[in-house]
Structures are given as structure tokens and as C-alpha cells.
Length: 143
Image 1 (tube, rainbow, N blue to C red):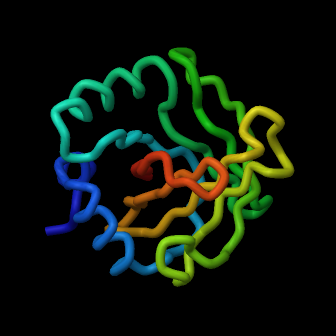
Image 2 (tube, one colour):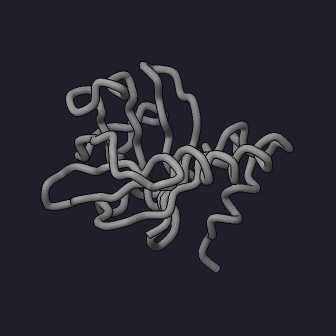
């Protein structure tokens, strides 16, 4: 059976890292995704923070594959803000192929953020978010 969002939310950081490193880059997604931020994966605190972040802060991303950009859905109103360039690149975790979500030239607020994603199941992507060179969280995108 393919992995689900629920499966990923129950994994530890080590399990998520293994899955990410074993997964193909997949195609650059297109359209509206449902997002789940993973803070301290596998911990009791994560079970509290995941729904809270989804409700108040971040609900996913909307990809425009042909134009090579995305917008994040933020706030309880799901405003489409915080633009990123989208392109193929090298992963900072294992030097393998990944899809890079680069905010450095498109967002004053998020210019130090770099995300990368890989497809871990059909229409399900696991992402890494970096502040500078420091990984700060994982996230899930379901299309």
C-alpha cells in the first residue's frame, strides 16, 4: 500500500530521512497541495503542533509548473503569498536529484529559506526546509 500523510506524521526524523534519501525526485508538481508541517517528528509535541500550524499558519503550496514558481497558502485565510522559484537541483541531504523551492530572489520575508522535495508516493511529496544551511523542519505536500 502506498504511504499516506498519516504514515509520514508518525515517522521519526531518522525514518523520514531514510525515506527521503531512497525516494525519486518525481515530476515537478502542478496545482494546489494540502500541506503538513512536521516539527520534531515522532514526538508527542509534534502531535500538538502539526494541527495548530495547519490551522493558523501554513496550509500548503500552489505550484505553477509551466511558469516554474509556487505560492504558499498562509494564515487562516489561506492567502496565496510568499513566492518561490521551482527548479531541479541537488539535494543538500544526499547530493541526489531533488526539486528545489528557492525563495532567495522572490521573497524579502523568506529570502533565507530553501526547500527541497521528493515524491515518496504517487502525488505525495516529502520536503525539507532550510534556513540558510540549517534544516529547520520537514513538510508534506499532498496533491
